[in-house]
Length: 315
View 1 (cartoon, rainbow, N blue to C red):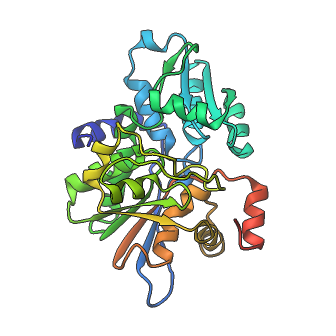
View 2: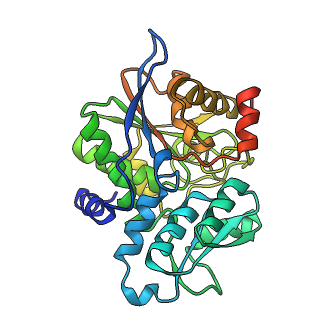
């Protein structure tokens, strides 16, 4: 758990880089829960990652920045780090898995980042080890860096300022940095609010860990929900995140695709797979009742995939 003071300091530090995103109501029917969307897909890089990346980089001593920035990311953290590097006039090297969508890779290139594709297992090994061997620059870990977590936590502050009494906050779970940050802020200020995580089936490592009482390997199956889910919870994140979470959900990919369509049809919001996880949990009733805040974490989806989902059942 990161401290409330660290999160509050991060908010001041990243002002001017990350925007304060709106919290909007999604009407889901007369008998449905009261669903609210925290639209992080509207950030300058279309993802919440700009918050944590900017905070971590601004916390680093100048001498550590001299050789540039490095991160390992499926796409969104890559854009956050590339954005921060561009603002500071630094080079950025981004290690991506060979499954990363072209929409995210193109965005990294637009921001001036250098993309290095790795086989998924090698890329995941970099995240587990927290080290990019043979590459110069400050490695900004996409998940477990304390500055990243505190920056992510600023979302929690904004949620409670706009809706002081949510019953539930649903957060997509990728590596745990977003959940740890938001939940730390929410539990510090309103401990009775339930925190629910959402992952895709075929990558529900956190749900498996919650059931087993600790990190456990799962049969990872890639899908268009590329920004969330993994084959195993990071051992470093488990003790930080598990005390903060009340329930962990694993959602069928078809339900996530349906949520992408619903957000586009009813709210004119474009969400990527990970960004639609939390709304999928609420729209299917699995997040319960009352006032439910869904973190729409990003909107970086290949247009061809979006078109497929909007005109079919998705996959």
